[in-house]
Image 1 (tube, one colour):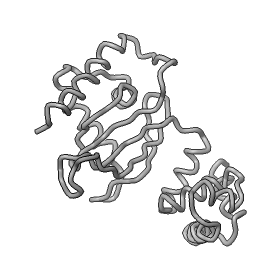
Image 2 (image 1 turned 180 degrees about the horizontal axis):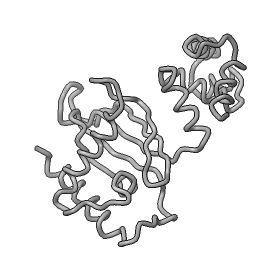
Image 3 (image 1 turned 180 degrees about the vertical axis):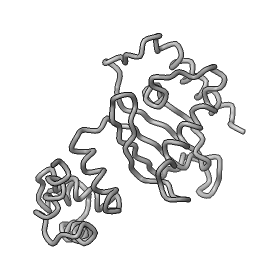
Image 4 (image 1 turned 90 degrees about the vertical axis):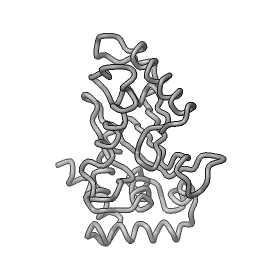
Length: 206
């Protein structure tokens, strides 16, 4: 059972979604395109911003405002679990909302004041961001070769043209650790050099 505070949050967002969206399927360009949700251990939303609701329901609308939370929970579970290995939740994946591509990223979080092993605190934060073509290419390559999030991040920054020291500064690690991540990525991708990593992205476009 949701706490009164949680239920209130979902109700407020549900009303904002139903009143803030007109009958047309066009989207308001002035709004941020980034969606944000907090999920509990059962992947049920504790909080969702209007942008996330619009992304997940577009071009549909919840049939009834009081059913908003249940409909949203079903959509989140389908989006997060669909296509992934049994019993595992992907850290990052691509989703489609209308004709827009989004990158869905999941992070482990713990709300202040909640027990570390309790069920009352949210366990996952879900971020929905508009994906550029380059970001989507990196995501597809990382999924294809089963790169870890940190290996994928190092590869993404390498593709952007950054040197090891610059990648290290962005990731908050040492240049030697960057080399380890890139070496592991090379092994998984079946290449022996950084130019070999780049070639994977070139071939992906041809």
